[in-house]
Length: 105
Image (cartoon, rainbow, N blue to C red):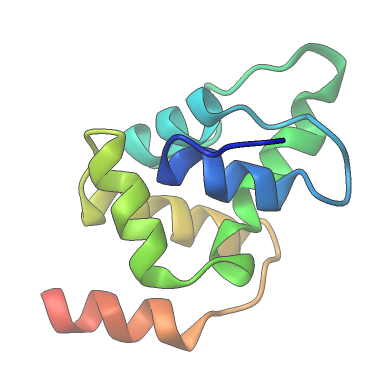
């Protein structure tokens, strides 16, 4: 039986559901803290892992993303930088995330 120990584990489990175990909780935490996937390295799977991390905004509820950011010792501003990077990478806009950020500015 699989038990999730943190919100980061929960989100990573969802991101990995279709692709198998590629993204690690540490990868998501790093991306949220730094506001970029640029420093996430996963060998030959780096491009796939970075793409999966960019998909977090389209796959996961914004409140859960913020909980993950707090768990990773990140703030919403860095998470939003990651969101902006995901848009530049071709991911679709997520109105719910944008509303959450607008409420904080």
